Amino acid sequence: MATFAQTVCVLVILAFAAGTSEAAMVQARDDKAAVNEKILLRDLSERARSWMEVRREKLWISCKPCDGKGTVVVPGPPGGFHKQQSKARETCKACSGEGRRFIEAEHRKAYFEFHTPEWQTSEGAFEAWQRSFRALRRQDSERVAPSSLLRRKVTLVDHSHGLTVIAEGKRGKEVEFEYRWVLRKQDGKTKWFLWKPSDGNWPDEQGQRDASESETESDAADEPDESDNAADSSTAREAILELEEEPRTALLAAAAAVEASWRVTAVGRVGRQLVVTLVLGDETLDPSDAKRLQRDSIAYVRALFGPEPTEPFEWDSIRLDFSGLWMDEYGNEELLPRWSVSIGTLEYRKVRWENERLDLAARWKHFTQRDREHADWTLIGDS
Image (cartoon, rainbow, N blue to C red; front, side, top):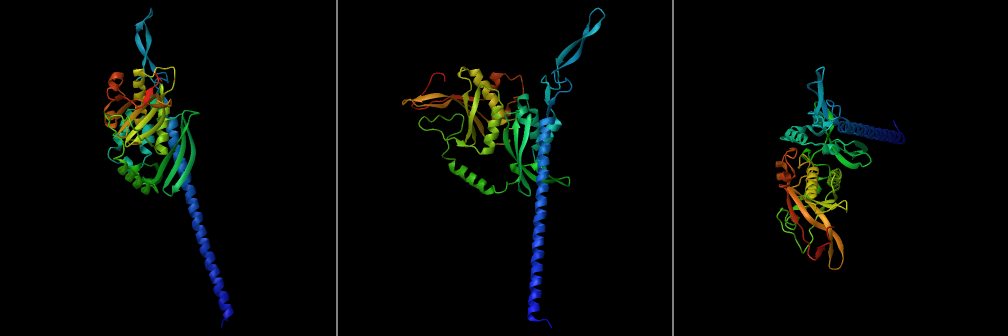
């Protein structure tokens, strides 16, 4: 018969063994989770690399039919003493004389198939992609297919959501963008796909979204009239709200790629209107040159709205504030809007901007321009 001491000893040994076993199970579970995270991180990194490769190397390429020259040799009429056939050159139809062209299959892969299966099968998604591809022009190349793409950061938010930070743009002038990814199954395989708001709430964002919606509702009555015909307030400054980091960075990068005399210095919002502040980049230029202002307005609106103005940021309209130097009665000088140019989303979508037969006047008639005034401030010359 076991003594009391022996019984206690056995219980201690059993307890130790049980604790050791439980600790081992916890450790094994933690090790497995760590391995799973490494696999998810590796897969996300590889998926992002594949997406970058399509955009950088396969989407915007030299045109093969014309060997990148923009023209092709075609037989001309017979000529010369020996009746040899002469040769002539004509604009390459494959690239419209550009020498480079967007590849439809690769654009579809990058901007349609890399999104979630649920979004791909949603109503209107494919048609939206088709419109965005048909609207592409050479000036869109650095936005759609940047010449430089550098992967800066890859992180997991949880086991089904991840983030990548990619620096993209012209070499030496890259801008960092954050992209969100989500795990989904497609054809029996689990893959990372680019996330869209329609794919569900991002982790820990529901509370922020509710707060934002509540703020929007409560501020609606206090915000200025956004319509194109709204009168200027000459007694109070308009409250232009800051944008969140991601849309602000993306919009400034899109604006930086535009070749224009006026340059963008800030972007903000008044309700659902995007407000863009511009200053003249060269002091020797005449700021009152109407055609220059019109050309720059069209270029910036096309860059900021993009082929599909509701993607990735939704605005009811865009307003461009062209600034000049003003002075008050006390001698204070400040850059304030001199002209405002605006266009609504619906109006923008009606115009076939890619139609080269639309001249400057035909395009400009869809915009609204108004002079700005500021009480107790005087415009200084043509600054």
